[in-house]
Length: 454
Length: 107
Image (cartoon, rainbow over all chains, first blue to last red; front, top):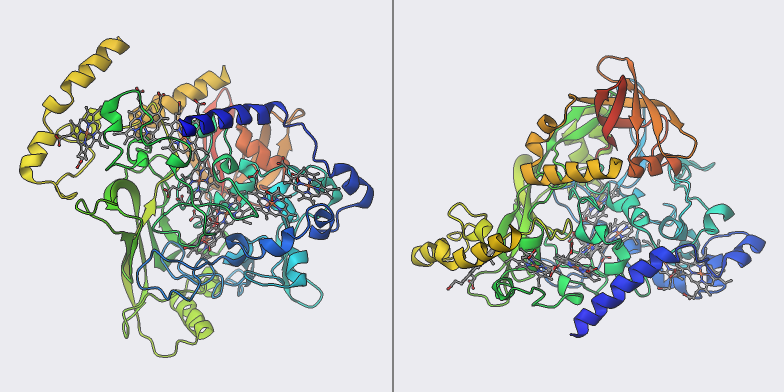
């Protein structure tokens, strides 16, 4: 009942937001008069915002992680320092820089920490007054940001600086973050538009987007701590979480036939029947593009092009050099069946200790020499004794957007003879399976639906 | 009109799976990677023409763009001249209509 009320409020407020989106930011007049000088301008009225921002995942690209195997509980993990095969490096080994010249004599800037709201001089995880001043508030809060400004260049001292739009014009159109503001970075994660998750958020691909909801309607944020879920592949978090039942109830359906499933089956399983994005990459061999630069070989898929794999998940994660994925089982009552995209990446492992090595992309980008990339990363990390051998890593990606009602899985999708669930792999006995795949359990329900619809 | 078409497209897409998508469409779909030479936003901002130099043939191809997401990226300069684009288009009535228009980018 309470949750119903929450939804009613959200529905109303999304409508309201559309209606009054022209409402002006109360700070506008002040900014018009005094110009925009960076976070300090905002702090005249929103004190202490910048200092607190420095303590978030979006600034640190790391946090303590408590649900993943084989990690040091005292360390922080994230894009800053993790090594996996969706992108075979991290902010440290792939620090933003000018790459060596390619055969055509061309160079360019490349680095993972371009998706950071700092200016690179104050980089991932930096702190202090300089860092506070460097925050790009407007990349998330302006609706008229000029993205020509947001690119790397060299300053007089030869340092690589990430540009920002700090114009007064951009600061005059402050809003709470729109889908676009978030997608500036999220859309291109993993090496290009929709590569990582095929996560297109528009009316055609997501039922909530179709209702006019934005990212922050669900990812409700206080003090810039943005809540996240338990994607086995994405570890860093601000200590706050959200889920479908933050708003809906465990029993959201009129039909008890669906509600009875929510104890063991996650909402996502029925409501996100497709995933998308890259399914495999090879970091040991790079492809040469027409511009003479090389890129990791990638097998891409669009949003909704990939059929998920279903597995039990209790929100704790198995993490070994060749496997990152969900833990859980049918017997474990805290587990539910969730949908995942399985991604497989090929990269170099260290034969001496079996661990995955990382790669500095600058050398292979220029010449295709992937082992030079491994050598450069090893040098940065102080790894001296290694022997690179290629190997594959399997990663399970959580699937938490692309929600649909009309294409949600129905009884026959699962209980039909050729259903989407592999009951055997999920731990059901042959006897149970013959019952679970017999029309007896859904026939009556589906006939009633058929009569209603025709 | 445009909206109904795109809704129907989306539904067909979901119903049939994207594999058969191109068969549903009447015109043939061409895939191309090329660098943007010029972007012309129409007055009113409801459409744009981008001229791409096809990496394979070296020819200039004018692509007409009408989807809001891409138009918005032209307006705020997330996509600019000089960017390399992965593009799918269909030719109809002498015009190349963009079906997919994305910046290429590595990891």
